[in-house]
Image 1 (cartoon, rainbow, N blue to C red):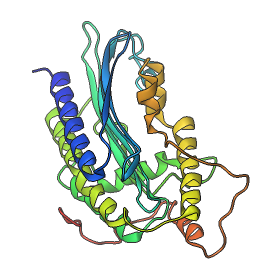
Image 2 (cartoon, rainbow, N blue to C red; image 1 turned 120 degrees about the vertical axis):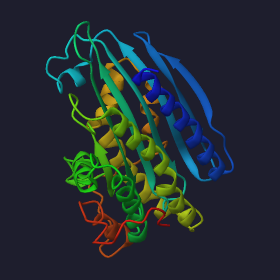
Image 3 (cartoon, rainbow, N blue to C red; image 1 turned 135 degrees about the horizontal axis):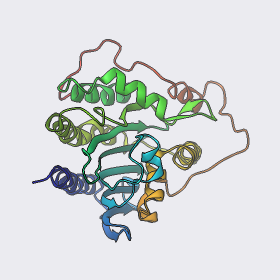
Image 4 (cartoon, rainbow, N blue to C red; image 1 turned 90 degrees about the vertical axis):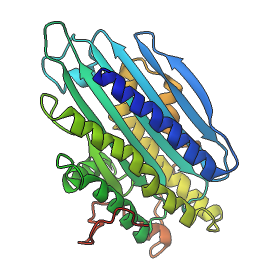
Length: 312
């Protein structure tokens, strides 16, 4: 089986397993599927849950696309690749909860391959996972980051500290001077596009997909039944406005999807169903909302604590 076929199969299995788990946790709504075909080659399936008991919107997308010419967003990063055929497959998920105390969650894993007759193929994996709470809790942040550190410690090419710094930098809303959430891990290229060991990188991505549920579901169960009112809902929508700003201004996955003619609904499923903006809004000093702002700056969430494989 070719490399592209093996990765595609992994992404498809991941979608099935994640949809099953999130649907079971929600308990009230089911995912609906929407398959799509890309005119230039390939396609995918978006699985969307809306108006559930836990999730206001949850999306788990799979795609596998190919084309005769590398899109500009990739060609600019890889000199000499312009005009060459490409293949890309990926799994992405975004969850926007109903309860403002439950953090939003985003993760994706992707594989790129650039070919060309008579030329050695370039291949690499990208991806990551990050948490976006409206009302952050230190114990939740530590659990999430410990789970990611435990994932990385099995794979020398995935240094947690380096991937965390990359995540903090990538998910910074530069015109606001703050991060979208509390970070996680992020990598454009797990190994260099002209190097690395495919089997080792594939093993990391497989373990990464398996780590998503234990890193996030305990936090949902811990917070989903906390009482909230109009004040908390207002803050949630204001913080979601920051989420929208990042995705539409900075997110490279959004740009890649648009440049390759991907399905618009699948690309924009990452946006929350409701968001808000207010002119020069500032939370009251000393409030829970004001305290939350301190979390949206780079911070060491491990503080020397050892990583535990099944930290709950």
